[in-house]
Image (tube, rainbow, N blue to C red):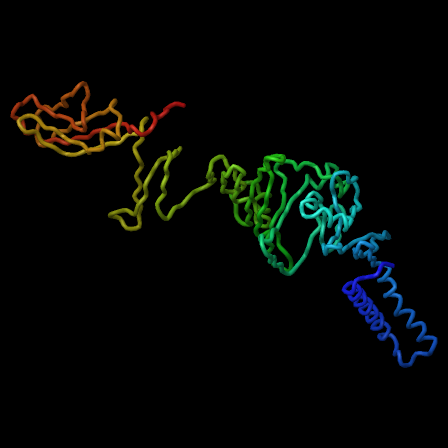
Length: 411
């Protein structure tokens, strides 16, 4: 037998002592060792040695320095846990190129695992868990009360991944096989938060799921994130509505192109795509167009009737336009009205209009064209056929914005 290192030998001796103590306790429950005959004492020593011998038979120390532990499951003895020479803890099975389709987990060679290093090990799909699950019983799992990841240099990573639907198109016929390209839309891993109630775990309270958008290549590996919460939904299907209270549908999705969808199982056709109402308790600033199929309204507290709301809607037209209005008065049948100094830069020259309304009189008024236009250099001229008229009037000017493209009315 290969000689053990002092640390390994100490661990094995400790296991033997625990096994012997357990056996002696079982014996003491049925008899008093102090009253045993010489023959019984020999038999007792043999019984005490049996657990220790069985333990040794299931522990192997290899010439390379591996410590392997064997267990018997359904009559078959298999290596179920290993400590590699480099200190890695390995349990369960491994799948990689060339792995045959099988239900029995092909085990990792600990020495080969150490030699592969971090980069090589990533190409192996292996399990580390407590508890073995059969076909259809769920995936390998690690159960723990708490977990702390502390490290030096690079921050510790939690890495989740998947190589095709359960490693084989034949699943659930087999559990192990060569990794295959993961079908787009497959869950690559899930962080689940469970809730306890009525004496048991009650479904997924909330979860985060990652999915691949396409088959990954060496240059492109796009993926999406989904955020799920259990609770009420807008679903009309009774089954989906009932299930949403336990497992929770996707409420927000972030696509690989950065598009975000919010709602119940939302799509994400825009940078922010919300399926439902949006409420803002502050300003909403947009540096692009605001497009709406419904009316553009304001709703405020009614100014004169307590408890009621006043709602108005915006006037709409086939152009992005501005307006200016005011009052003026003729002097000796003529008036020149000046608009803001930025008017010429802000608006298009074509299509400008001026409307006039008499106030306190009926003298005829008209806008006098200048070089064929009603408004020139930010001014317009109002005249009357009464050369001495002092008619008062209100005016309104409309013009299309020059900084925007012409609106495509019927795209």
